[in-house]
Image 1 (cartoon, rainbow, N blue to C red):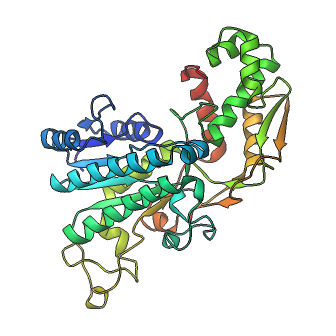
Image 2: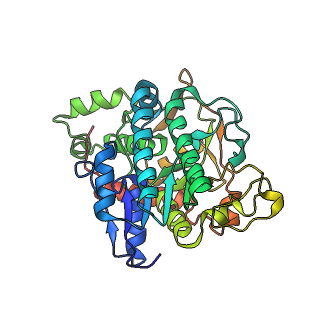
Image 3: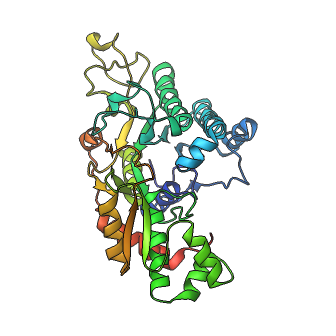
Amino acid sequence: MNKNSKIYIAGHRGLVGSAIVKNLEAKGYTNLITKTHEELDLIDQKAVEEFFESEKPEYVILAAAKVGGIIANNTYRADFIYENLQIQNNVIHQSFVHGVKKLLFLGSTCIYPKNAPQPMPEDCLLTSPLEYTNEPYAIAKIAGIKMCESYNIQYGTNFISVMPTNLYGPNDNFDLEKSHVLPALIRKIHLAKLLNEKRYNEAIEDLNVSTLEEAKTYLAKFGVTKESVEIWGTGEPRREFLYSEDMADACVFLLENRDFQDVIKNEVNHAVPSNCHCEQSEANKNKEIKNTHINIGTGKDISIKELAELIKEIIGFKGELSFNTDKPDGTMVKLTDPSKLHSLGWKHKVELEDGVVSMYKWYLNNYKGVK
């Protein structure tokens, strides 16, 4: 890419998209295209077609998606599969039609089977059933991977799919009803600290309520008091976390330095299509091309209990952490194998403790309190 290349970032307001925009701007890219949902509804096929026709982006980063936690995924199953398929179909197809030089499609490690081997390598995709609660979202993301692969094979496009592990960082979702575990823990423990230290006005402002009693009543639903913070499950499940700015750096690295041919050229069981811009041997011509997506993660995990204790220490909460063992734990281990990414030349830089410190500072300085 050149510094003046026209780059469209779909989903630029989200956790990853905003970090990618920040990374590109810091590296001197000056021709970035962003559109809000109000300006461009990616579910609208005609609107997306007209956008590509008028703007003609050279590079596309597809970070836009309908996302949510376990409850949202399981409750709005139709919405999650329909909206994500529509977004992907429209953006990926129009990228092909309008000759986009490279597209980066962002998915999620929820694509892997419920009982996938740990750590999860790319080639365990579609080897056994998915976790039921997020199955529609996962199927949509798998379709996106296969769509990119198929266009590369049939048309020689240069579309790369990346699957990030659990992400956290600036612009994360701190909604106590909808957020993922790490931002939820930060906010719950922060609010418990405010109550513990009798900083009532700050708690009221954070929650955007009128009275202290209203704040306490709302927080009680989530097991937050001045004395303790309740956490679902035993605290034993282990999870992997990647700082969003590291994720952005990995994405920009791949855009700048790697092509689809680099992803598959060292895969001994993968063929190279005859019309792909890749070198191939006679022996490889009839072999299958699959699992060309790339895990993006740290290859390191931490238990939920250890994570909560780390956040408690960073925030400085003096109360207790309690674990509600009547609530489900979920999958006990979920860890990516980032070997392919490492072989392509990128490794994470931000360790978890440093990332949580930075995220908490961002929360204190930028978060506009809402329930």
